[in-house]
Length: 399
Image 1: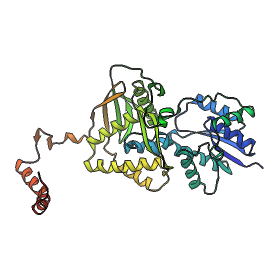
Image 2 (image 1 turned 180 degrees about the vertical axis):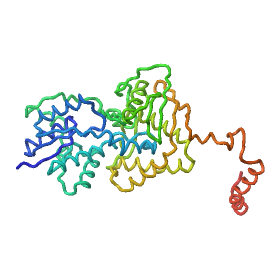
Image 3 (image 1 turned 180 degrees about the horizontal axis):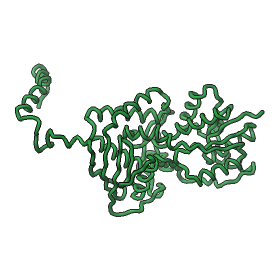
Image 4 (image 1 turned 60 degrees about the horizontal axis):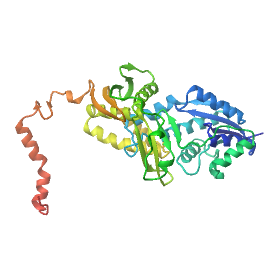
């Protein structure tokens, strides 16, 4: 009997080659699986399935995991205000982990002997897929023809043509990966260190002028409303912010960082929704959390984002960090006001029943209600005791 292999399938050139190669050359019974984290609509999913069938797949399935992706990843990235290197909302990096999780679950369901993916040997995704497969299904065969055979794009296209499959695999100037939590853009200028992407490289062109007011509502840290409209679906709320922000060409930047495999890399991205939501959420936290909650959240959020990027989602400490982040969100409820303009936005302010500026203790720089002038004099004197002791002995410091 033929061995069963589940191929992580996007319908692109690499996975199309893998589907035909594994069924034809290696005699596997190939089952293709599209793990959709929100980057494909229904029409695109149907087209991908049709492509898989033409390539000889014995079966195809679309695994809709958008809600799981939100509940188990995006939600915590918002709680942690996660921006890798202060810039990148970990868009594709976090998606890949959940696609790998869905693929290995499906492989177990149908009793597959192997799993396969089309990653090359030059990027991070190969590690994310391999590690997830190996941890959750120890010993399962992992097949990676594109990586192992070091295939060129031209070879793959010719192979498909020679075996009767013709498709429009025109090499685009840029590789674009669109998802619920942002779109990555790679190629040309991203391959060197001295240039940035031109306007034409971004999928969402500027469409608006002037200014526009945007409001985002949060309940216990989760986005729940946009411009006064309540959303039961958090992913739908994210899409609503993205649609508004994209018209203003907001959220464009270039991420420079360290890859899992130890080399530096650059990638362009546009992520209007993630950046507007994260910065609005962070402003609301400034008003509703204590300074030490904010301090430790910054530390945990940085580690959480780094571990997601480094394929460490299954590390148990991630659940501990999620518990911490969740617990900090109990009072992060309210509305944030923003002003949008071409390529930029301004955080205007917030309205929240938990706003710590609404206390009866005083108004900063204006009025104190809970202490006297003498209280401050005594407090300041005690606060300076340690430094006074040090400088009374160590006299090398000169004003």
